[in-house]
Image 1 (cartoon, rainbow, N blue to C red):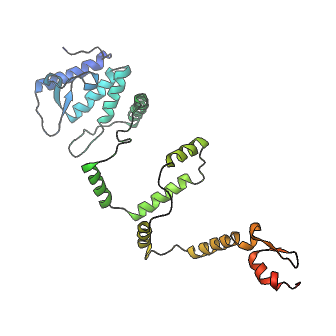
Image 2 (tube, helix red, strand yellow):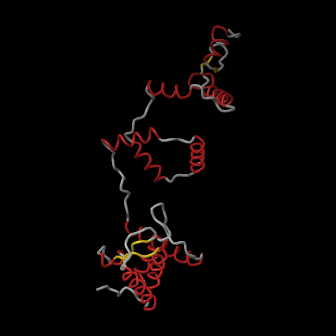
Image 3 (cartoon, helix red, strand yellow):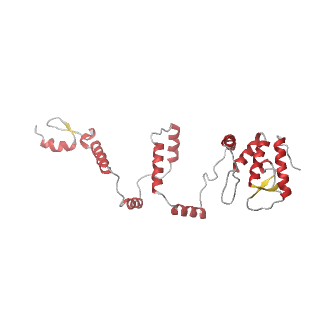
Length: 264
């Protein structure tokens, strides 16, 4: 006995079950251009029993799912909208009936489906299946092989890098975020690179041309560093000449003061 309590619209229900009855009497089997349909959809409590299955043409299948949307209300309605959206999916193994599905109808159901689906997923508080999962054994070897053998497009890689840089440029992190980043970094190995790592980096850079203006930038940076680290500009290293009482840096003291002072 089929439970039809969830079907509220009598007119569309009548059309739906009339179509199903004709299909049952026709007794189609599995074949190209035919699609299996659950008379009472599984999301509404229908089973996989033969009594609840029937083969329809692609067109009939699409129209039946559209009728189910018209026949239901509340939670059942949203489930049938979800199923109707799935009727638009198509691949090599699955043919679909290409009917006129107007932009207005599509927009109406698409917006309702998106809103309902968003609420549904938020209420589940789902956690990614692979969060915190450590790969081991065969899985780890397979993952390493896929990573080594993957093809990298240098143009796309460069574009992706520019996008990432643009995204974080000028980004201001809150104190809470800074604290979390600091805590996550605790315990991670730091310090100078090993000789092996240095050699790997050196080998990778051999033959790679430096970008335009690289030398000028290095020279400018070195000048700045020399200026900041100049011993003569450091107050803690300055000496007072015992002959002229001038306070000067160590190199100036050695050259122009002390035993070489003109006022000696």
